[in-house]
Length: 147
Length: 201
Image 1 (tube, rainbow over the protein chains, first blue to last red):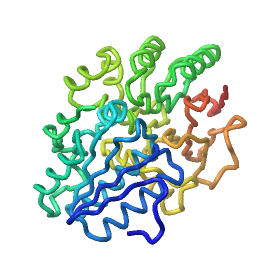
Image 2 (tube, rainbow over the protein chains, first blue to last red):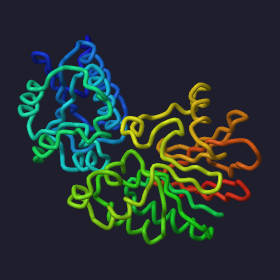
Image 3 (cartoon, rainbow over the protein chains, first blue to last red):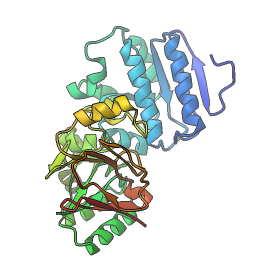
């Protein structure tokens, strides 16, 4: 993990996965840079998946969503996964209106996301970056959204 | 033709009302939206009612891609059906005369979420610019997305920051970024004279 303790983000590393929880809204300032740096480190470690726990924030600005998309892109390139948990309704609606709900698997709890992540295999799928274009999102997971 | 250019509204209803009123006073023939009407759907009904009433045509942005192209039943279940109907009229790109309109750079695919969510360096590198000139067929390209004013011509960079009118006349090709309605900006483009006149609230 980073030698410097994160200021705006909590990170819990498990066996082949990590849970990242932004403690403040991702609006494109230092907190978003920190989030992106942590994602890069975890990707470099070759983790199978990360769960982004959005349970303590009620809003993400465009740069924050862009950081989530970038995280997805990084992990998908080598067959890994980025799962989202505990989304506020406003954030979930942003994903739907932007069609990102077809890219991200969304779960009501962190535990549900971890269990789903552990069932996923790590293999570079054909067209890993084009899931939205093929409509190959996880609608079952999306329906687990509860908040 | 006098085009009223609006972009990056992000459901800022008051700013949109100002932009439409300002451009109506300038007697525009057609409003063109360069994308990102949406944010989280909270004010999408009111936003789209204003756009519909003004007869706005447009292109989708990264924030609109779902409401414009996603599963219709899901969108109508989540958002006001009349707003969804308006947004479904938006295209990936529009061309009016020799002007091309898109939310993102010409070298990117507005039908790809990954491309829609990538943000360009401003100013673009020479390599990127070369790709952008090859990415559209018209003479002038107008985009939003970045929430700033910027212009470059095929002759080189332009010292322009949206504080004064910009001439896009002549034979040069132009790539212009229009600043967002959510930040209190809009523009009038006269396609015949080539003048782009920015307005700030």
